[in-house]
Image 1 (cartoon, rainbow, N blue to C red):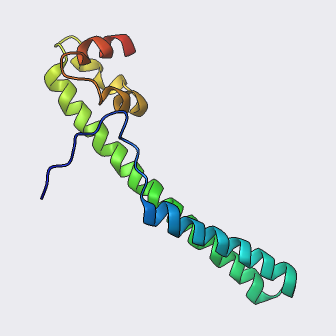
Image 2: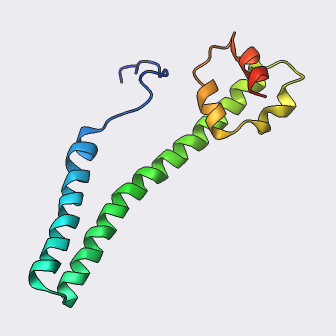
Length: 123
């Protein structure tokens, strides 16, 4: 397996073409089509259920993404706690739990040499 390039502030976001350019647009069009069908055909069990199903599928796709990002945040927090325990001076180590998820994600891109000074500044 080829080594991936290290993540940094410029490349940490990721566009996944099959998801962002196919799945989401198709699911959004499906919601729109279901609403159009409700207006055109009238209210019936099938049209209402069609809208509910279309919205459920869209929410499923979005929530799956949110769940994955939540797990990623937990891994980043664990990674940073371990890294900070090694890099930070002894007096700052007890305060590692005070960092928010956002602060840890931001500090993740700092080098080991600059991390203690930035951690002090954040705290």
